[in-house]
Image (cartoon, rainbow, N blue to C red; front, side):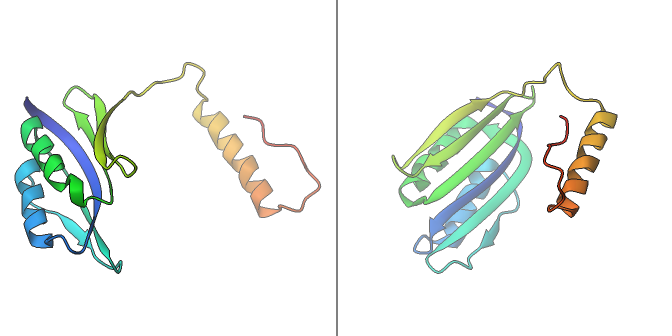
Length: 140
């Protein structure tokens, strides 16, 4: 199954893993041109990537299976062409990637912009003077 999706990811692996080879695997699996790294930690490095690209389920699952033994932590979030949301999260207890679906729910009782601004202004006043005698919370 393949279609286009927006994705954003951060994966942490030990420094013993070949960084250049892993970056190439990510580029191949996700069809992306750029992967950013941070190797300031003593024993591991982080990889970040995100893009709007073709989501090829077979390539991504193959990639996740290949890096599973080396992964310390990770999360890859996706938004599909149809606005569906899902993610792969690395479970450090089971040492497996887990797929989770997500849904956006809009509340009917949302506040107006004016009500939100008034709430934030009142909250800001209380934060500026935390030792005032006023003990009530701003109305929500």
